[in-house]
Image (cartoon, one colour):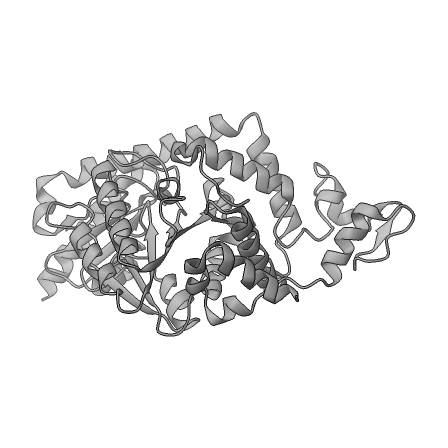
Length: 431
């Protein structure tokens, strides 16, 4: 049996619902017994010479320029210059799994795969899209969503984005609308749900009652014979300031039903304030270890055939950060800084004078919040703020203006919203 047939047979045998969820491309993926696998075998077993991998060495060390290494003296050349494995440095994967288990109590006792290193969170989402999304598949997601989803899932893979109203009239996650969208996929037999908490752009994470409604809806759909991928974009994980859940839905969904496949996508360099280092993680949950291994191999094939592997240096830096004695304290300090800004924004927006200009969507987490403008167009306001006052914001649609309080000092937030208010008044007078 060839490797492709073996992988597909393993998935079919252990969970045919997951095989059904794979895209046509995903069904064709397998990790070949090529240069990397042979090199890995040689690295473990060769006693005399290893003439397999395409790097240059010198005195049992990777060959390197001194003028580069002198800027990286804190790092062993072995942790900088060789290729990292396609699935990532194993020690880093182990450390991230340990972190996940520690920070997500609901994962205790659950079976999950070893996290796979990706080139940032976007690359993780793209891998998921290639593995599971075919043309005309439906992606169910809230109407407040990161615009890059359109490129990743619709432009690249041809999926249809079916948006439901995120908030109900009480400002809570709209479980009835979510249920309506999901149950519409009963005839297709397949659904892909994409949830991003803390949400970009709204900055909202649901509370326990809302999460109960989300999970009940997913279980109802699975019991109705809908095979469901649940993609959890946890880009802003950990930044919870209010009455929300304080963990990922991944732990709540892991092993909950054979027709639900939870997939967690993380941004390690976002969590560790090193965005440009581009390290993310992709993790599958299933009670079946053979199934997890098969999905891992298909992901490895995708990585090998696109970027080959992620930056060894970036992975080394993140690994050192996670193991640092200063990690917990520094993480808490940064959290408190951003939380203070979020609470300051809430205080500013409580001022009565702003009531005639906008309302705002609930926010309790993450980097962002969104104003809902009453009388002016968001794009017109964005341009006016930029050209007249030198203030940058993001227009999400005709009514919603996203503000990243994460990038504004606490003492400058009053001035920021005063400029936005002034811009609204300018446009109203101009009308």
